[in-house]
Length: 390
Image: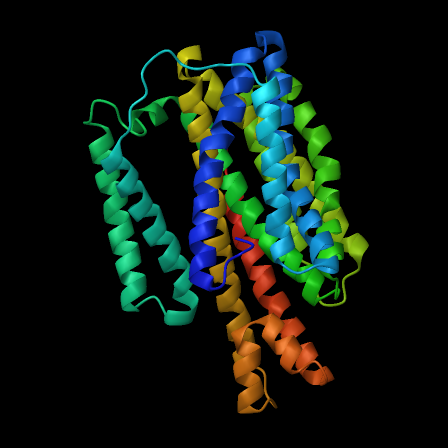
């Protein structure tokens, strides 16, 4: 990616990197469950769940630090170097946990899942700019939905499915998967909004924007370690429900911020959000793992990762689209801007601040319009994640 010379090259390279990550990430959890004894597995899963979320924050901070000193390709060079280090450590340290049962591929199921998820994400992302009646948006929604239905039908009939959708009938498996999906839907979408909030409202640079998310990690790690003992006392389902409700409370608190908010008023609900996230993640992951036998832990890990990544992709798409709609509706109500400035401000907050940076009126209009869209987006995230566990 660091050597890409066009957006298309960058997108293709990012897709290849995502393919590699899809091979690696499920293996980390399945290896963990294979090598850890039963009495220590819950704590190990809790640490794994916390690291999977905190790692995203560390990545944002690291990228910000690199951008402060160098250009954007440095982020990808650093990531590649880190991947090489992890590869060496995996070869030297990680034990072999290969499943003796022969693996099989499901080419048709793979293609249908890609078309289904990809079509819906493209439609949701493009809808604010093109409108819901646009041909591309309608094709993405209808085609993506049809592909997902075909995927579900195919994988209930083929001998070795990519994912046996009947597994979701198990209450533990289904509830845990849904909880992970909704948590990362809200988390990725909220990260997307919060980084922009501190950049456009507080005026933070790349590094400071990443550091501003540290309160999440400060609350998430202890909450993740607290999750397993709480689940043993009140049950997995109840712990999931409490964690998701706390997460929703944090998001509602973040949605109440305005253009004059202080960092303290931003950090407090951010910690509540992180605490709820940590409290729920480990029990939800444990529920998925507990629903399948030891020989199927690779499947459980893959489903956990799929729920996480699918939730994140749709979260950014949906919450970003809700924000764009709210932001542009607020911009359209602004008066006194020339047509050229209106086009720039409507394009994005970043473009509006750059083009109208010398005009206090334009800066105020951009920030107020941003906060309008930001509030609506986080309320949507809170509503999505505030569901009772089943």
